[in-house]
Image (cartoon, rainbow, N blue to C red; front, side, top):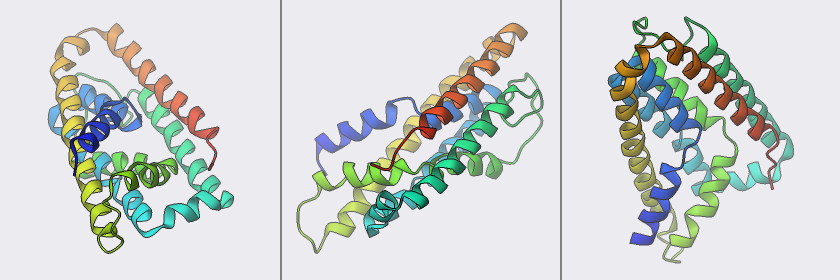
Length: 204
């Protein structure tokens, strides 16, 4: 593992994406503990894509237009559902001073689905990891899994920090009903925008 890989992975993880937005929304809406579950779910959602890239299944997704479209459509619909949830006063992503209790595993499951239903993630790993391999075919699989595991660890740590920041700002922001309303609309708009961006993605 090189410093170059660590810096590259860190830049990728820090860049705001769907998982970051979800973790921030959970941190603001439900607090720090819930945001840790969100970070864990988003991290677990990476596993299928890492395995796909390692086993070469990402190439199948890349070449099969039908498979790519099926996963993409599911991802778009899921993001639109999250946008709708952000607008509902009792939705999973609603911002309220006194949110109803929710099991951490459900929060994690939503976070995992965000990444699982992103067909570009497998192709991303297929492009990101190979340049940092030693070039020895005998150790390529182990190296892919090792680098992917480091990427996942960075994802969890960075997302947990994002969640902690959102949770720390929670009391101040949620004291204003107007701020709560605009934040909910903002999260809904972001998820809808991400859905629109995913909708125009192509396999190649």
